[in-house]
Length: 166
Image (tube, rainbow, N blue to C red; front, side, top):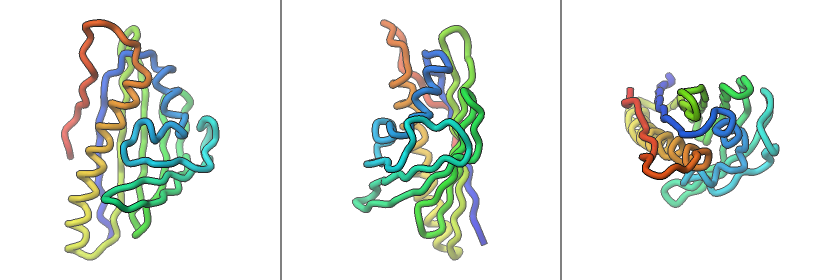
């Protein structure tokens, strides 16, 4: 039996969609946007098509985990989906999307689907821990990508992450 979870978030970014997209497709910058990412290996300069792969090393709770990621959907300038796993049978599909949100603004979205194949108690405990970590990471990554892409203007508030947990 597999437990499936879904986390969705979005944020308004004061930057043109192309600038936000440029940050997303340079996965070598993951350590800048993800507080748990300590290293990215074997990554191309930019993600440009389906089938590309890279390795992400994360540190959580004092332990290091390696994730192998593959681009499974690529719509240049709009949608990037990668699939990977962190071991123990945990699988993720991360979809990031960028769309115009008015002159000089973009809407950046993230959707995380995950699968956890564990026994009944393990599924519940793991889901709570994985979901909390993924939800926290999603919000933090959105804010960091926005910060890297944003046009700085005086008197403008920082972007706010929206969308409740499912």
